[in-house]
Image (cartoon, rainbow, N blue to C red):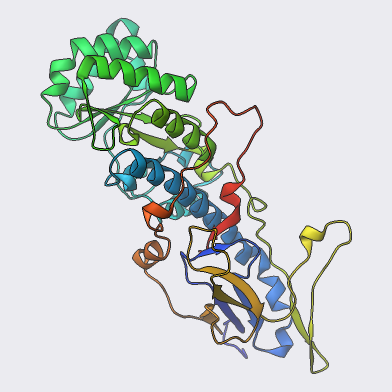
Length: 390
């Protein structure tokens, strides 16, 4: 009755989409009624679930940086927004998870098969194999005839992807493809991504021809492109795009689809997202609250009231500005009020979130380190040092 059903809480948070290094304050929660001192920790379970969209958005954006760097180095970047397509719905634990993760990915890209967004007509294996192996070329022809214009994607590895590219797409259906007002996107879906993609590009170049762009890299005839959607994550992106560049292929020849690697292959510890009490008032006196376990210095928590301010001390980062956590109050604090006693404040549009998360100038994004065949179990940690707040 006292609060008329509203929670007596004040919540401040980083503007959504802001790029913040890990181990910084992203939001603060204070109770506004001393009788409800327990309420701040009571809401932890719900509020800490923001780890999921933050982590998806961060991984998606780091992959966007990889793609942007290779597009910029080997050609043009106009197609960047459509270069990583969300294939993740069936790989997550619930419909709600799919929707949240897909929305986080759309902060950075435009293409999705999970929720409302941009997509194109595409076959899947059963719509090809139902024609039987002997009639695979007819299944391919049917896709071209059903979709005579625009983009259309066709999975092509049901049996022999190299035969499909050379004999079917590149010979029997070649004229039909070249006479379309649009692009056929061929989807191999098995085998070693790097070697398979390179071999297919060479076959398609032989069958359809290619040009060399103004940066010296090969581009297929615009009527044909590839999409790779099997096992895609940050590391496989680096491997595939690095190998293409090494073999003088422009990154624009290929797009990617990602499922479990985009929406599921992560957890709350991926970026060490935690919710801790940092200050309390006891008998009228405010005290810092923190933990500092002797068995793990990495789990020391922050103490006192906290603010987040811009800093330019890390000149090695391509992200500007950088941020650091300092005691609150601070005049440069970027945390804003988002909730006060039951009222949501300072709502932000999705376009504003996208603007906050935009990439830095492409010239400042370095090409990631590239090892064509990393040893089994090798993983890059470069995604884990930033966080997109949502």
